[in-house]
Length: 300
Image 1 (cartoon, one colour):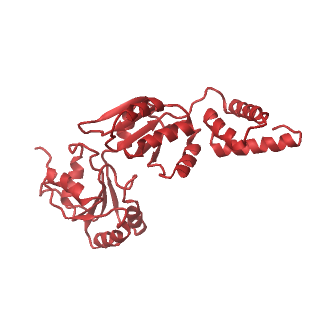
Image 2: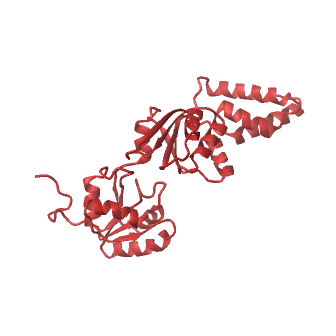
Image 3: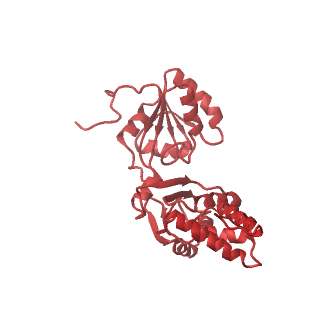
């Protein structure tokens, strides 16, 4: 007999917080267990009740909906914890993907754990893993960044810290800011292979592959960019050993310092991209070398 997630014969949900992954586009990308939890919960806490209502309507689920988003999560947390203490099962969902991962829900999950209340994962689709699986970039190790800072200074600092990272980098970004992110990544990390995933699992699903410049050029020809974007960038790579890289970096700094018009801030910016090292590290290295040169000494 086929499994029916809405059957009255299924046991009631154990009281607790259920963190439920939902589709990132195609409403068919939802698990039977997720449907069972959404149907059987006493309440669904949703990032946007209007958005989640469409999913519930598709599967004829009539569980009450309450909003739980970035602006009211603190207030909702107390209400939801009270419900769980009273023996209720509460499902937490975001607009797409997994709650608390670059989405609201983190505070609520932490609060439930701190109170010793049960928290149950109900796994499903993740935009990061979905994009990575078809990217063609290394999948054995990766770093999930999520949404980078909006302010350019903070974003540059983050990218400088990632300059030497050898694992595949995964970013989320809105369509309004994706071109700025592409420019910033290329500026701080240098030209690299990349993949831009857009509108995944939807009718207009698209994967742009090539270099950062290739993708930026393609987007520049479009009057409008739509859909949340997942950007994957190849990690830094070097055939040289770490010791050889350090020696080459020191030599490049020495050469740059020999030019009287060179500013340390400028050379650190240039060499951080060339050697895949954080700008702050190169800057300090240059200061150390400059100090030793003034004493007539060399770096050990």
